[in-house]
Length: 395
Image (cartoon, rainbow, N blue to C red; front, top):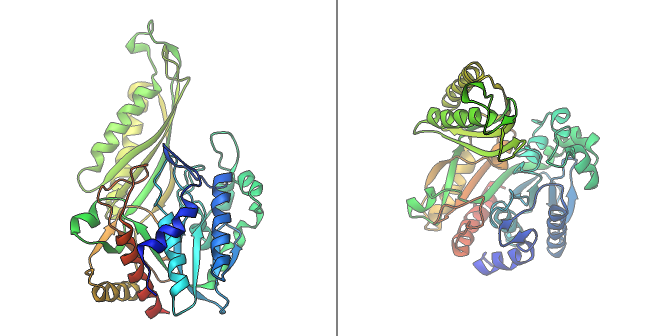
């Protein structure tokens, strides 16, 4: 029996209401909403005869009875704040649909905290599994309420002191395939239901802290001001200019203090997200941002501190996996379209240690990380059939 759109719709119906409102889907890692999604995962796995296990990083595994190591399919269940309903969730749902129909034993994985939206820890679970996580750094990070990641993990029933044991679970994995909604219009512009991913772009997240001086908004002359938010605005504009045509640079979050209408801002924290086809382009952009920060410190009297929160130099997916996906796509009549994806994904992290690949499903509007994110489940089912066929060959 092949995967149909109604199969995906049925699985999604149990997951979609969790954390969803008229403003979008919010399932931040280590929250009650995310734990509710984990409970859905366990129920779904049990209904298919798969046993659920949770590794030290919080990754969820739906494991077949056959001895490992296994090929796995999956994605993540957490979201950004007020995000879309398919980002990550589609890959887990499709993974269950594949595992239920596969001729070979498949594991389904839901990676923990892929978005990093609460503690600025993107691809947390997959990086822990791949041995690429600095536990001392990430466990000390705090959210908006002053809760550390370690405390949040403990509240969710995990032992943060055991985080370093996560790489030991990698031996269960032969390889990974991830199905994901396209977060751009790239696939739609190809005129295809889905496309294969050749690799992931280089990307960097930067945190900037600016310290000026609070003062009266009406009586403080311009020459005497140390306006942290004005300096931040100039840095943001320059970061965008430095990106040019081949890169993208986004300031996705800004916090300002004292955040009062009649007070010159004294302190700002902001986060920059930059992505480029090649790591050298990303490096040149970062040098430009640092030079701009030094110049603004001198010209504005505002102290600027910049720090790289995370960096990935890009990923090329396994050639054998790509070949299996291309052959399956051609047999299905979808065409073997390939592209470079500018989003970060767990499959890109796992690709450093195990064979991995990705397929993106058409998103006509190109909207993602927002409530307007949408796709046609017929497209998603066609893509899932391609992934299933490919992983059966690889296994």
